[in-house]
Structures are given as structure tokens and as C-alpha cells.
Length: 207
Image 1 (spheres, rainbow, N blue to C red):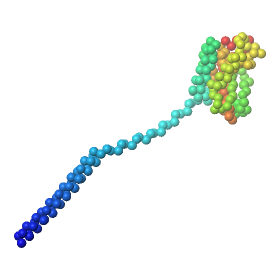
Image 2 (cartoon, helix red, strand yellow; image 1 turned 30 degrees about the vertical axis):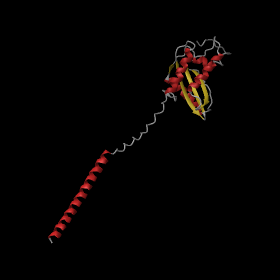
Image 3 (cartoon, one colour; image 1 turned 30 degrees about the horizontal axis):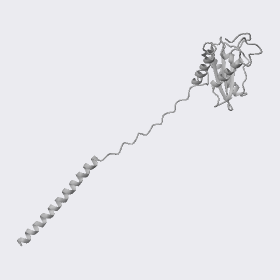
Image 4 (cartoon, rainbow, N blue to C red; image 1 turned 90 degrees about the vertical axis):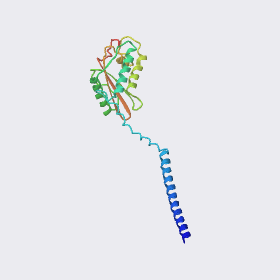
């Protein structure tokens, strides 16, 4: 009986020890997994989503004109270049003249959609018409300058001023102010520029 009791006790102790061993193994395994997960590389933060920029506002029309500020600067600078080529001083942009020119450009666009000069000769006037989207305000100034090849110097006369009148108005020495407007009708761009004091007086030289 005693031998059997001792064997039973030994068997019970071995079961307890086995359970403790299994518990220790599970604890060690759990700790090992925690350590491994702590050392594992973490996923990178997602890249920031780019924020769409607000579109830049369109160029605002210049004072007295529907022309953009950039076109006003360009057409004025082009006049100054053409004038400087023949030794004539620069010209200044006039908001009042620009409003006057814009009024006429709008009138032409709303009525005939064709070039026609005002009947009043209060200011000098140059007009241009071309395909909208293909031509710009500065192209008008370039077209007027192209008449330079027809001017051979000397005073203006009834017979010689017409082929050169746009150009000679651009370079007229006494003209000090410029203002332009533009309008679109159908597929045409109309550009009107006014000059003060006016030029193209018969019997006088432009410069």
C-alpha cells in the first residue's frame, strides 16, 4: 500500500511540474512575441495628400479699359520702343483716354463689328481688327508699326499720309498720352487706341 501511495504522489507531482513547465513556456513565448513586435519595422505614415491650389485670379482689366494690366503694359512699352527708334520720348497711359477708346470699341462690337473712325477728331485714333484668340493688343501696335516702311521722311501731305498714318500717329512727337480699349464680336478682336494731343497734321513732320 505504501509503495502504491508513493507512486501516486510521484505521478501527481510530475503532472504539476508538467503544467508549470507548460505555463512557463507559454509565458516565455508571449514575452518573445512582444519583444519581436516591438522591434519590427512600423509602416510609414501615409504621404500627405496634396492640397489643390486655388486658381490664380485672372488679370484684372486696367483703368478705364477691358484690356488686362499686362496688355496695357505691353502695348504702352511697344509704343515707347517704336518712338525711341526715331528719337521720340515715351508716352504715358491715360485712364481717361482708355475709357474713351473702350467706349468706341464696345460700340463697334455691338453694332457693325467692323472698323470705323469716330466722326469727332478730338483725339488721334488708331484701329485694328483681327481674329480673336490669334491676335492680341500688341499685334495691333505691330501692324501699325509695319507702315514705317512706307514713310520716307518729310512733312505729311494729302497724298502721302494715308499709307503711313497709323505709324506716324504712334511716333508723333507732340503726343504724350495714350489710351486703348478692346472688344470682341463674333470671332473678331477690335482694338481702339486714342492719342492726346492728336497727330497727323498735314504740312508737319511727325518728329
